[in-house]
Image (cartoon, rainbow, N blue to C red; front, top):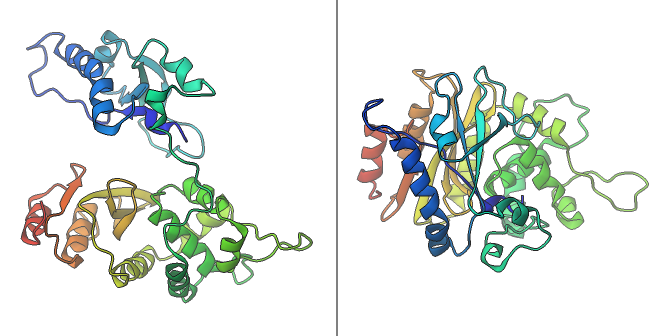
Length: 323
């Protein structure tokens, strides 16, 4: 995880020319982009990336342009529990070293100077809120109903507060939320009201993956999003200069739409949506509802994936003074 930023992912690649009109254009464009990428990335972000990553849908594309520009197919989808989401169309993963010794450098005990700025610090006892905010956030979720059986070991207020803090820290998957919980110190766990483990002399364990899964799959997601958004607004935080509107599935078939800081993924407002489109609570409708509730967006830049990039959403952003 510390070296993840040294891998650059290409998420979209599309040529607007008719197929066959410009032979080899795709591989030539990829090759030119990869030759320019390390230097431009270093100028912009202050460090040199080592690998490029991309994916293709094998049912639609053979990946010929990737092969021609020296990408290597390394498998299908991610199969670990941390990452895998079941689907009927697994994607083929591709890797392309950005220098001759990229893989050896990435595995080395010490990175060269030009790559060190890309290291991510290990999370350890770092909370996205201060002590006073933690107390107020815990108070909000301590009043929430518990969707589990009455004999649950971990209080639902503690679990929901952990989930909220993980979202504020930019975590999106259940496994990431569970890992975030393990990074908390014992005094922080005590303030969250986590129970003591008998016979340990003061050790407070944190909920595991299964606990977070049970709560997320049984709770009312709209009530959770409303509580968290109300708390965020009550903090009176000023919106940053660049925000991203992004939807992620937190359980089937529910998704969480987040307006988050581009720099670290910390959310400013959240809403839930259905995975199916053309429903009263689809992602586009959720985006409209979320934007309507926001304060003025004077001088803010809002980015989004193609799905919520619709005229109505764009008009709302502009009317509120954003771009």
